[in-house]
Image (tube, rainbow over all chains, first blue to last red; front, side, top):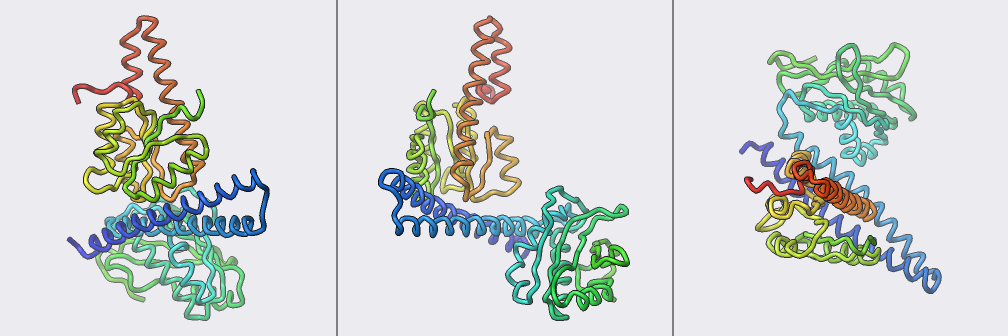
Length: 221
Length: 157
């Protein structure tokens, strides 16, 4: 068994367990809400009951967030077993990356967003390679001070599939745009693959991240 | 037909989850029997049953084995998968084996209820179409409808 297969199995098992735990919490809090609703109908609302109702509803929202995170972890488990040539749904990878890395990015005052588009954008490379490249982009933004918002979305442009990275808001926007513009290639990807970062247009603070094969050569700047 | 008439079995080895879910369904007028493992589920399904809500990962006999057995011996019963192990591969396999729907934990109870109602409605409608064809003497078409909808067991399988 390969190490990645081992990690994928352990992660998938943990996600299964996490979902079961979330399901118990969701049903238990749901039952509490049901009972309070019944009481409200029969004897009227009580301040303590209303307070408890609010707390239980907050718990249910937290469970929903946990469920979304567990979906992203499940995707990560299956993605780590995929072939180097994919396939990769770039839209989904952007969603997964934002969910998995939101907390860590916030510590550098970087907000990650994806657009609401659900249409898949398919590409022939491993989701893990793209996740790695997106991490490099965020690290680059962090290295110049962070404090910006990034919006990620899957796009097809001139027969190439990639991620549109829009830099918006934040006090450090110009510095970050400058750093991304001066780093057309990202280092450290899997051997045989490279990531390119190109300006979307000359005027907008947007970039287009693409992944391609190098024919077996390691890419460096 | 009232909602209390839908005969439901909840199958999950997570006792706390399945008991709480049964209690919440009962509060909404749906009486559900529960089973905590595959063999108990297959024993339960020998009683009149419309819809089974089935977990996949259970010790001993897993959900796929239960689904296969139900679709072979009680094909009129609709099976909704409700699992924490919600990978795309499992979902495709479940549908291929005749599952009516595939839901991931943790789910909204209203989403589950909608799925149960739709599964039951489809079961009744399929049976009514088949009866209507059979009453008209078209037994072959009735048989085809039932086979197409996974209601008639393939005895050669």
